Amino acid sequence: MSENSNLKKVQLVSLKQIYKAKKQIKNYVRVTPLEYSPFLSKMAEGSHVYIKCENLQRTGSFKVRGAFNKLCLLKESNPDIYKIGAVAASTGNHAMACTEAMNQLGIPVHVFVPETISPSKHERLIANKASLTVFGEDCMYAENAARKYSEEKGIPFISPYNDIDVIAGQGTIGLEIFEEQPDIENVFVPVGGGGLIAGIAAYLKQVNPNIKVIGCQPRLSKVMYESIKASTIIFEESQETLSDATSGGIEENSVTFDHCNAFVDDWILVEEETIAKAIYFMLSQHQMVIEGAAGVSLGAFMTNASRFAGQKSVIVACGANISMTKLKDIINTSI
Image (tube, rainbow, N blue to C red; front, top):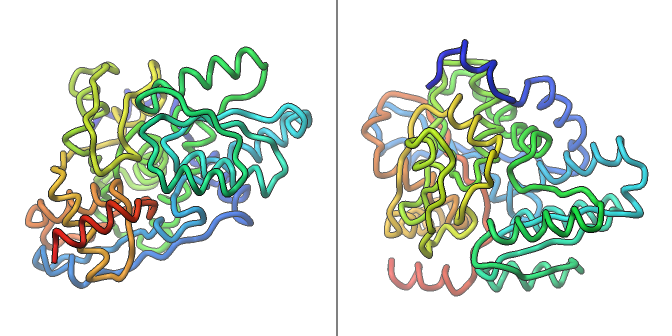
């Protein structure tokens, strides 16, 4: 964790921006439950463990928070947005979030998705009348293509993570956690490009620096973890993982790297078997479906529970968008 004197050297989301985001998006997103888990609490003696259920969010993912905040702010600053629209790139969840915002706000959005997008997400996007271009082997390639399209057409690009307004929207999750459980000690957050953890950490560490923020990545796709170790954003090929929503690289000069470097206290890498066990755990014990990315943060706690005995922890379940094929395979393997 960097010293406070270092935090001023980089562009970080402010509490003011997160509070404004809360007002911007309140009519469009759900305040999701912070559910106590007696099962997880028993894993660490004397602990109290809660799940922040963004899997119950609109579109089945936290991403609507950032998408709505960004598009609402664009609507304020650029009245022509209704004519020119915007462009985005995503592994699926951000695409669905932008499509939802497009339908609600009447702003046209064209979305680039990678070839690795799950069939179920692709089908939902088509059903929601999304304007799609499939490009590249992971989200980094789709992002580059979307930025080029943005420059050629002269329209705004909505990054899934590398955008202060998007990060501020995701930061409302941290705000909700703190409002409900202000004495929280640890929060486990899944990490891909870093927009989710950047927002949550920015809020929590500014209101209480003693809260520990733990970044969780699949071992098969750990670009942010390796970048923090190297003190610079690196390129590393991602392997196929159940956590497809966190798979892929990080854009050069991404502001999320600065947030992770400033605010994230610890990192846990999670094996594929653990992700699958976490998904099955949520289905069998909490009767809720979660996607692979949510299984990463849950699995990180489950395999390290003894480290957090006697403490109050929150696990962010970021979404529920898993293909039925994957879910069926996990259930059949676990029974």
